[in-house]
Structures are given as structure tokens and as C-alpha cells.
Image (cartoon, rainbow, N blue to C red):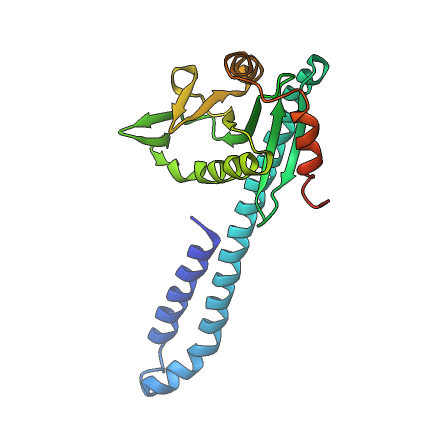
Length: 222
């Protein structure tokens, strides 16, 4: 039970006890209401404060989990640099507040936008009747940002950009999913999948990596 629920229950209990105390029968309902108003208002305010704090704590925990997931993906992608890949992280888009978690460009110029997800390991990621689910939760709309980021990077670079989700924590049904053109893979498969994608797609020039580094700056530095 949440703190807010407990406080609300305490407020109701206090109202019931106060209203039933001996010697109160002679007082008017208006008088009793005036006496109860201040403590009840304060309790309601406290419930509201605790609710907001709970939401803020949940958002902070979610942000921290996401940031740790991005760091883990960054460490995985680092092995591509000695192989001639360009590996960029946390890139700002030209407009808006969105960012690209990672952008990797193969030596031949295949660009891949990599989005990190770190979801609860107790629930499997799967596709059911055309929707993406994490356990029983519909998370289809959580890929909307990646579509926007990929399309924006493609416009900036003037070449097609491929989308890839690297999943930490939650198991991926079948070991790999393709949902609406977006490939979703477990973190430990990310590098082999990236290298496979690069081999199977036409490159757009060996200078694409350097062009991307010039055109897209780290978030907060552009």
C-alpha cells in the first residue's frame, strides 16, 4: 500500500472518530466541518506531495536504468572501433530535444541508429497480433521515438539509416524480433548482428562516418 493511500485512510479514520466522539452531538454539522477542514486539507496536501514525490522517484529510477543501459551498450559497441567503424553516442538532433542513443557507421558507410532499452528481465518481449508487448504491457508506441530519430538522421546524412534496438534485461522472444522494420536483439547479440547488417547492405562511402561526426554533435554541445 502506498504512503498516499495510508494517509488518506488515516484522514477518513480521523473524520469518523472525531464525528462520533461524545459531546459532539450538540454541535452543528457546519461547526464540525470547520474544525475538520484544516487538518483534512493538510492531510490532502500531504497525500498530494507524497504522490508527486513517488512519481518523481519512479521517473528518476527509470532514467538511471536507461542511462546505465546506454553505458553498457556503449561498452559493447567499443569493440567496433578497432575494426574501422565510427561509433558515436548521445547525439542531438538538429531540432527538438530528442537524441540518438548511438549511431554506428561501418567502414563501407552503412549507418545504423542503435536505441538502447533496459526493461524488466521478468517479462519477455514478444509480438502478439501486430503489437509489441513486454509481458502483457503494450509497448508498441515506445518505438515511435526511434523511428523519428532514424528518419531525422537519414535526412541529415542524405542516406538510408537502419534502426536497431539493443535490449538489456528482458529476454527477446525467439532471440530476435523484427517489428515494423525495426530489428530488436538481446544485448549480447548486438555486435554480431551489426556486422551482419553491414555486410548485407550497400555502403554509402568510406567518408560517411566522418560526415556523421561533423553533422551530429553530442547532446548539449551543439
